[in-house]
Length: 153
Image 1: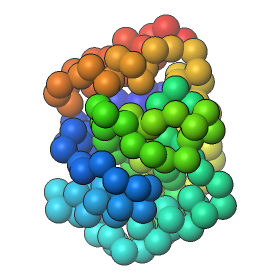
Image 2: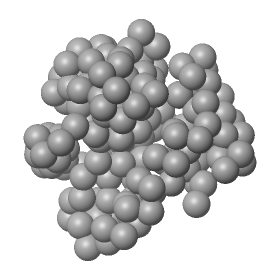
Image 3: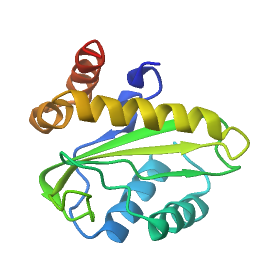
Image 4: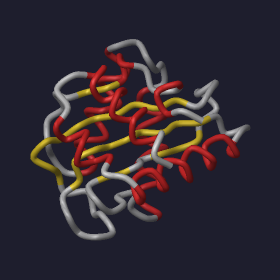
């Protein structure tokens, strides 16, 4: 399961404004809607915020994986945002978050989302993915880095 097989370059953002978790997720979902990548903006944002209210999806090493399941999403969907300076995202290690990898899946197929979450968590834990992505300048560079780091595990 290759991340860049699901994450296309038009879903990689370098220009989202830093802020708190709610404002970042709001802007992220709005940016996806603006690029016509999602239709149900308010419903998806509501689902993401509901999931965050259970427990933060901020991991360690500068990565967060906000995720939700929604009937509006036909196939699993990834989008990525880079915050070079970092944001406060209630991470487990209490360090700034630099990469948000947004994962949305269909509520009828939670298994695919679980497999992706496990794969991404392993990738973050066993590689220098976040440090390398922080240095990226373009979406194609992010995909190259993802492919290189995935080859290590």
